[in-house]
Length: 320
View (cartoon, rainbow, N blue to C red):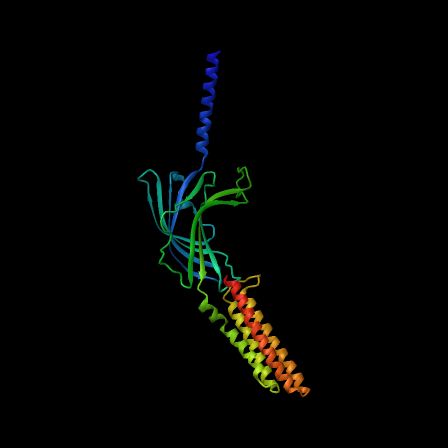
């Protein structure tokens, strides 16, 4: 009886061993991935793209991964591999390559020109999904030169990580057991903030000058109505023209942006100036010149204060 018990125990142990070995063999291989950014340039706000030049490296055991051929950068418009080297002297595969990529990305323009943008750079292996390959981010050292600056921008942070990207398709693989495919990826997220002071005045100085010209109507004598209407209408067209010039440099947006808010606010106040001119003309026609001048003074001061406060509020909301 003891012999039977011992035999059964040995069979159970022997049966468990292959299962454990199989579990180990089915685990995905780990690829250590890192990046060093040489430069980010040619930031094209209108076309929603930028160019990144960087060094990337991979360390792994499975030579079938072959990142020279299977490297995938999903959001890249074009990829140029200008240099690569492979070292297998220690048993692992160590691959170092230089990439120059034109990346497509989405811009957040609601607070332009006080905007902060997140530039994303993602790497995958096009042939091996997450059941065969997983990335591990190499976080040692710096990932860009701390002295490096992007003209017109400040680098707030750079974060590298790894994750899983889910594709809601099996890419036509009739042998796939699922309609969903998952790939491990290596991700870089670079957060930039714009140096907006000079750009803001360059874009909106014409608009504010037009508003000031329209505001000067309240200091022209009420009976000189032709000059007042001429200045107001001219200022109105100047603001509309400035709005089209600024929007021509921005990508299309279905939302209401700071640019729209400031121009819309200015147009409304110029319209109120024209309304004030019409009221002054009506009073002049009734020989109430003193009342017309008094109304101009009160309306002008109230409009100026409200306009300045509304501008300050909109800009503060965009900057914070």
